[in-house]
Length: 251
Image 1 (cartoon, helix red, strand yellow):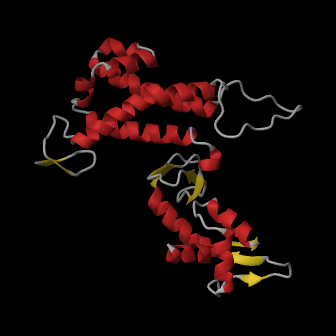
Image 2 (tube, rainbow, N blue to C red; image 1 turned 90 degrees about the vertical axis):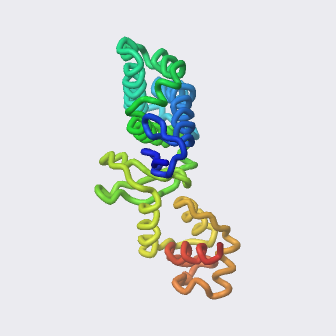
Image 3 (tube, one colour; image 1 turned 135 degrees about the vertical axis):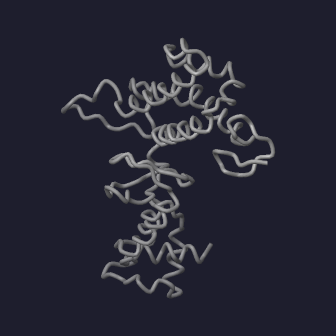
């Protein structure tokens, strides 16, 4: 018995590249997803044929938008380069294929790809690529504030279940749980003035779901010692850290 080179769990059967059965399955599904879903979607966005989320209002005056989405273009280039590299490992001539033919070549050679000596490293590289693609393909209203980049202080956003996040400013990749933990600590320094409904909406931006009724109950029961009333009816100065901590206790 040996350890999988990707997930580092004990694998009953060792393949040439030391990937366990689960990782081999996930790796192959990721390859299929890249060519079948992500790249076609990104190309549509790049050419402005599709839009993620709510369409933006375009003013009648001002600068015309770029004819292509350059961020999507960068993601496409990275994805296509990965496909070309893998196809070239099957046969050198395949490296010159366009992305779709390269993907078909890979899909047609499952055994070869999964048993490459570099499969563990290739899988890790593909994970990074697909995570960035997924973030670009996720509607903005489904993203939450994960925290801030430890290196450049840029805001980091992602899906609630994200395991890692890449900073759009410095392009460093971080573990999402650690970023969230640091964010929760900083929430104690964040205050918002408004109604329980306003506080609930603000928490939702951080991926924390709580109803305005529950916040009102906490106020009535004296569980929010940091919340101070204002001169306006039903409005308080809330401490987001206290609300987040109270939510953890309530779960």
